[in-house]
Image (cartoon, rainbow, N blue to C red; front, side, top):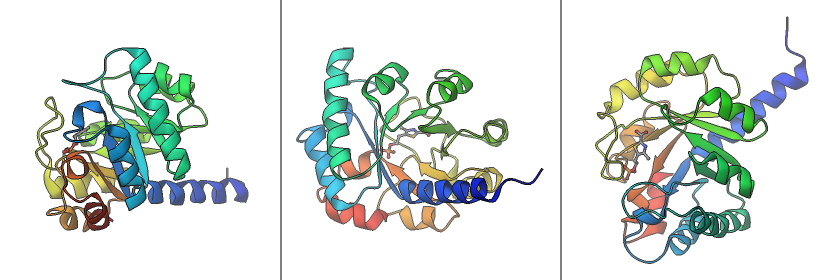
Length: 223
Ligand code: 3NM
């Protein structure tokens, strides 16, 4: 049966907003900060024009106590609100619900994606995908907002990352995807033009922003 016109228009507007949101998508947690603090780096990145932030407290050097993570998440959330940028939480359903984040990003081996969708019916839900099979399965689920596809290149920020897929495979996987796509993994100001030459909707970075000497210039180059 044909969709009612308003439903179709609403859907188009959600997709348009999602694509804009994915343009320069910054991810970070305490473990990624070399100099300064996460809130100070985040605020500089927000001023420079990032379009989305994901709080990802994970791995060596990360905060482990729920209370500490919640306090940090709240500080980052209020900065994102000030700059009207969506604030997402990586993986931690309990934290995302508790602080009423704008959404959640999960990997393939985190919580069951159907369950996550059920817990966040009106929020942004992002899913990491690494190959064609994962995309074909995820394409069946309407309520996923976007896919994070990668790692495109080798990454220092995720020790357990999969093998890099490269640009050709990225392009192929984007064609397979029925949702907006943000590319991830090893993306820098040097290689971003190759990534943006695909049909990707945006780029997602940790170290390009946390390790740069000039956040403003870096964010501009990633746009
Ligand atoms: N997820 P950087 S790669 C968090 O492939 C994350 O799913 C990946 O950091 C995936 O920009 C990655 O420093 C790390 O390479 C991205």
